[in-house]
Image (cartoon, rainbow, N blue to C red; front, side, top):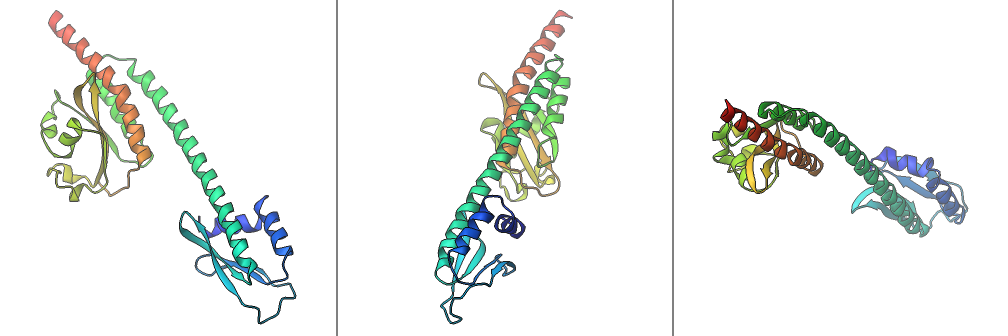
Length: 249
C-alpha cells in the first residue's frame, strides 16, 4: 500500500476515517500518523495530555510490510492495530478486484479464441490465431508457436522449449541465466511457454517471449495454458484434415 492510499484511508475513507475520529475522540493525547518515510498524514494536536507523557511509535503493517507509523501515548498501539486491520482489508478488496478483472479478461480471450480457431481447419491459420492471442498477454511480449512437425521443429530438440515440450508450462524471466537455454533462446530475455498436447500426444509449444527483460506472472501463465488447451485440439483436427486432403489428392 502506497502513502497516498494510506492517506486516503485515514482522511477520506467513508468507514475508516469516521472510526478513527471516534478512537481519537476517546483520548486526550496527541496522535501523529505518518507514512513509512515520515511524511505527515495526520497530526491531532488537541488534547490536554501532559507534555511529558511517554510517546510510543507503532507500525501500521500489511502482510509484514510497514506502510506507516502511529506516534503518541499508549492508545497509539490500539490505533495502529485498527489501521493495520483496515489496510489489510482494503488490500484484500483490491486483490479480489484484480482477480475478477483477470478472470473477465481470460473469459473474453477464451471466447474470442474459440470463435476464431473454430472457423478454420488449416494448421497455419490456427497457429497464426494462437500466436496472435499469445502475444496479447497482460505483461506483453510477442507470441510464438513451434510445432514438432513444423519448419522450426529443431528448436524443440533441446533447450528450454524442449524441456517444456516434454514437461509442463513454465515462466523463465531470466533466460540468460538458465543453463538449459540454447544460443537462439538467449536472444530473448524472458519467456513463458506451455506444451500443446492432445490425449497425451505433444504437438509443440506455444509461448510469449520478450527481447527486453520483463516479469511474466502466474496470471500470464494461466492465460497461456488456457490458450494452449483450446489451440491444441484444433491444431490436431487441422493436421488430420490436411492429411486426409493430401491422401485424397
